[in-house]
Image 1 (cartoon, one colour):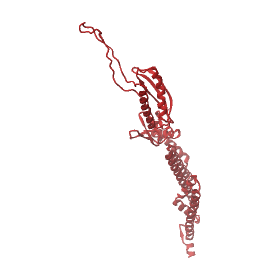
Image 2 (cartoon, one colour):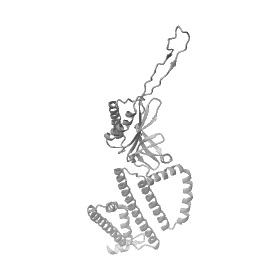
Image 3 (tube, rainbow, N blue to C red):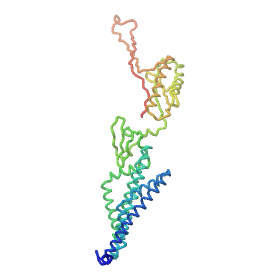
Image 4 (cartoon, one colour):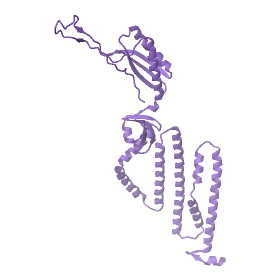
Amino acid sequence: MVNWLDSYVLFGIPAIEWIYALVAALVSYLVISTVLRLAVARLDAVAARTTTHLDDIVVDVLRRTHRFTIFMAAVLIGSEFLDLSAKWDSRISHLWFLVIGFQLALWVNHGVSVWSAHRLQSAAATAHNPVITTMMSWMLRALLWSVLLLAVLANMGVNITAFVASLGVGGVAIALAVQSILSDLFASLAIGLDKPFEIGDFIVFNDVAGSIEQIGLKTTRIRSLSGEEIICSNTELLKSTIHNYKRMSERRIVFGFGVTYDCTPEQRRAVPQIVKDAVVAAGNTRFDRAHFKQFGESSLDFEVVYYVTEASFNLYMDIQQSINLELMSALAEKNIEFAFPTRTLYVVANTASEDNVPQNNSVRPRIRSLGTTQTGQATQ
């Protein structure tokens, strides 16, 4: 049997060497798989006792080792038991480089995926901008596979200098063709670095007002107050002046009201203190000032400034409502009336005849047109 194995030749190699190579490949596959499984189990136990995420990423990456690369490594180990020509030895060394490089690329690619997924989950929990994480993930993957491709080509004897130069020329042509897309891409990068807004922020720009729902590589999605989704180009968004109301620490409120001209000076002097008491009593406020501002056409105008110590628009509306109601009650107790737009007309009759003209020929009727007082406004 041994003599037959020595005498039987397949592709110029004795059968006994093929058997040795097959046994070596099987043993190598079993050993590599077992060692890898034990290493993953050991590292998994260690990672469970730590609070860092790096060891979890390492365990997950090793667990994703591709079975095909283990098989190819075992086959290449078995090929060492074959008496091959120098040409095949060179090819096998190239295959070793390809298998190891491919597996390393798979490990790094999966590591980047796990890292970016963890970062995006953290960003979703804290409402941060995920653009930088997404772009870094794409760039790392593109760089990884580009380096692997160039390394494989260089190992196979291809002149990569000319290849890279041709890619550069082609890249310029492609960049000119997709410059609008690249503009939005770099705009999203600017949003990620500068962070003018993040997911969940309420912003106003031009005639758009709404909350940020998603920041993409080309567009940003905004949920408007009326409910519809607004999709805006990142480039156009950064060209506008953006009001970010989510980052307000407090609101400055300015509002005014008027009282009638028959209000006495003593009553007018009491109005600022009445306003201050109403503002302070509303809570979550900081009073700034209240002044008799000017003589209006039909009212004595007062201006009030105060701060709401929280950014909530609903809280501001509740406070303003409380202040308005308190002012109505307090001013009524002082017999101070709110003014409304009025106009007095003086009409003088013509002296047509002495019989029809009364002794006092001037009639002065007073005509008033009712209206509403103006109050201050604040934008959400």
